[in-house]
Length: 481
Image (cartoon, rainbow, N blue to C red; front, side, top):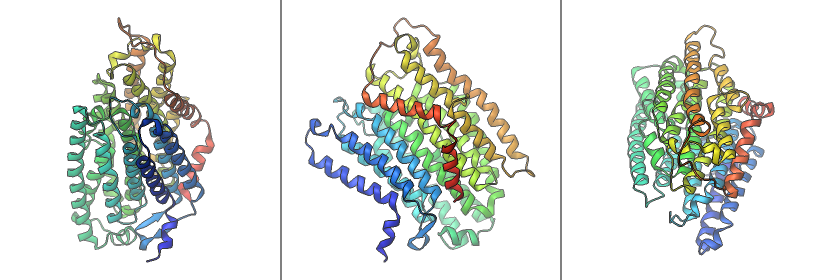
């Protein structure tokens, strides 16, 4: 075996190194006083890993006989997810330092890095076996993260629903992979694409495969676990689930559909049309009915998943993947800004997460209300915020090269109509903060340093990512390399 190949897996090697360092540091430290430097250490290592991943990307390489494939697009997406995880870890400091939660800080960091490692392996998979191993490596620690606040019965219930649904979806996916293997005779993507033809067996296997991965992305009708899990999980974990996990799964599904199932494009495009329309429409209608903010954001994330996958139906691979990566980047800063505010309000006000609790919020906490409004406007796609540009590129990618096919234009029109619906329910939160009156509004409080840093970073991204063209150009260059 050529062990030199391991040195070409820079992102994964860096995460393994961070995992080992975190484990040793946690094992050697005693008491909370010695862990004050823990959060800054992990945060610095993650942002350094993101930078190193970008700097060491050297074109396309196949390792271990094609089981692992490194590409500039993979490296760019991994760097984006590393940066997003850095924001999550930074935000988690206040929650982890709460004595009532009784959570060991190192456990959260190690579980988070383990899930990220699995996502990286999944995105760089060159065979269905490597893909499935990466998927399960990410899924099992995620279930532990959901149940990390073990003294709350809501967290235990959320974890049970997550792990049961994940188990069934993995079984369905594995059955689909077995059908594909039986029909084609190989698990390696390169050989698989060359031998793939649209037969009833391969179509059935592909449907099961998309259904299994659709669970990870929360596409309708595979979304039923999302609201309960998001509500019951710790808010920091909910934020991680909504952006990092969703971003990795979306990128992987897009890559496999376009590159691996390319000979069956006519078949999977029809399925994606229905999944996209259902995800955006059903989630938007359900979000209007929510009264709890984390459940509200759950249905918002389902809708956003539909918009992310809209890029996949385009005929130009570079335009589709670059639009998807850019959308995920913008979604990370906007969504994490919202969850940072939800988290700090929850921690300072005895766990209040109802939308009605935010009535009159602007009167007592005008700065947090303003930052929440910016993030919601970006999620809704209101110009000139970055969310408008991300939706524009996704819409553009969906109709790119579709001159003879009018269905993508219909799907894009439905998505545009749903954007107006999403603006309505995002403005319900804004209305609660600025217009609605409350006899007992949330008191004035001061955010901790980490939360203020997270909100500064996310707000800068919301304002700058749309107008700084170099961001999208770098992503597009990676997709075309």
